Image (tube, rainbow, N blue to C red; front, top):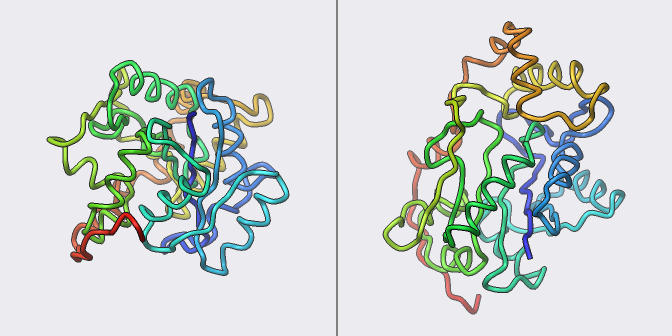
Length: 261
């Protein structure tokens, strides 16, 4: 089975409540779910939120839309993913797709490329961000549950607990890693949702494309940006992976986990 687990919370430092912001009459998180449902490979979608009471709107959304969800740790996101998998009875060879809820332009065709490479190469971890060639906001990470379990037991840095797959990527001698590259390097394009300017940009994309075709692809966005190049200037000042860089700077050794916890 292939499970997409979407991490989502309301307490973003830079843009609080971003996952429930409105895009063409629907919250951001609904667009993420709807787009992932277009995947040919994903069997089930689960939202992993946290115990903070501010996340109640996310839980209410899941209940209304009949979407599976799990409530776990606020800061130990690796534990949140692991407990979500345990709650859903994943087996060692089941596949987990990690998606963040701040990616309302995620392209399921790109996700499927990563999944299919993961399976065909029998990798432990496959992504499109080991070498970034896709726009920021189309990030996708794929790994087997047994690899997630290994990370959960052994990751002991605060950055590795906050950023789910960092332990895996830090141990390339232990795990077989794979990367999907785009034909053209588009890594300078920013399509993620972390700042208000990001929302202005994404909102413009939706206003231009959503009403004519609710399922528009990466290629459709690129065609739009070719016609309206000024849109790319809206949020071009921000750096990719600011949160990760901050976590690495503030790293703390937390010790390893016991499998019986």
